[in-house]
Image (cartoon, rainbow over all chains, first blue to last red; front, side):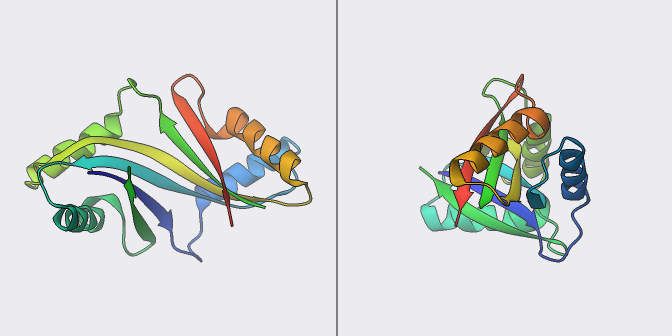
Length: 80
Length: 80
């Protein structure tokens, strides 16, 4: 089973990287770019487990290792 | 117009972060996790341009600032 996990800063949390990109774009005269937010995408495969068990393991891994639940939220998508 | 850009390492390029996550998971006895690949997800808004022009601007920004075309590829998705 293959999964894609999107980890993003919660709304309202200052995105320093995103602000740096916005400012870099302004310097290069891309003036219409707004609200740049930067997160992580993690792709992984789970072997040897049923569908439900695999998903709940990915959820556990997110909380344990992939996302910081204080400032980030995550979304788990199944990939074909 | 709102876009989501996924930037990922090309297949075959060593993913050091991904390997570190895999090894961390093994230490925690998640033994069935394979092929962890870590990339970036960038969300941004383009104002004041038509649909086609906006997308081609995002493409230009990817090449210029968001992705390293030598080792990464990117995918642009339109977000509702």
